[in-house]
Image (tube, rainbow, N blue to C red):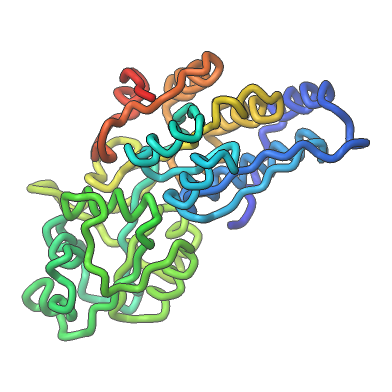
Amino acid sequence: MTAPSHRALGALAALALAAAALPGPAAAAELIRIDGSSTVYPITEAVAEEFQIAHRGRIRVTVGISGTGGGFKKFCRGEIDIADASRPIRPKERKACAENGVRFIELPVAFDALTVVVNPRNDWVDHLTVEELRRIWEPAAQGRILRWSQVRPGWPDVPLRLYGPGSDSGTFDYFTEAVVGEAGASRGDYTPSEDDNVLVQGVAGDRGALGYFGLAYYEENRGRLRAVPIRHGDRPPVAPSLETARNGTYQPLSRPMFIYVNAEAARRPEVRQFVEMYLDKAVAPQLVRDVGYVPLPEQAYDLALEHFRRGVTGTVFEEGSHVGIRIEELLRRERRD
């Protein structure tokens, strides 16, 4: 992912002064370990770059991409300090964390408009309904819905080839819950990858392809792909964008994204300062926009930062992703470990 060009100089200068209180480079640099969602990765990588500049090499931040599920596995084993997640933590992951004595702080960091894409040479799809997406992706479609002519009468008899995230991806979980009605319920005869760039390449090279992933990867590849407007119920079709995700009209594929912070790791000054930059409303919104996602409302950054500084642990999600949830509601819910 290309690094963002924006530099929030005033806020970074203040953070750089704070960094001076940390141990100098005579010893090995402090290390913050992050892994998880490829969707959240561009934001975390942008924050990590700015943070390391501010701290002049005194702190090193590593950011991996093992998918939301893979990140939670490492997080709940205590192997990383922060997990990037494009869905909320699941009950079985909470149990794994509890068994290993890992308490966590759940923090929303941005919105995403999960984007359905086709090849630019596809000249028949003007929009898709949620029902058509369900018919394409539900488990019963496996081996049956194989051509575009089967999706809508009048469409050409062109092979339908599908590309999407793997089962360790939070994007996979959210999409299947929003479209099919059950997280993880999907046909298996498609090309999966935890690397969204692989999905981009697949759709870009195949006239009959259809895929889905986060908005940032579409924005970075606009010249190679075409985003498909989605019709939900009786509403007119709505295209994915920063504005339609922000105003709530792009449904049901708008969603919050998260970082999960190990509560014990949050006691370390370098981790605390990194998360504070991630939630700083003078820095974070521009970085989020630069990589193609939708910033939280200012009040939401304030509330999330307050929760972090108070060390409020646990999740507001009992089951599933709660499709269509508003960020203000999320931040006011009672949390459970």
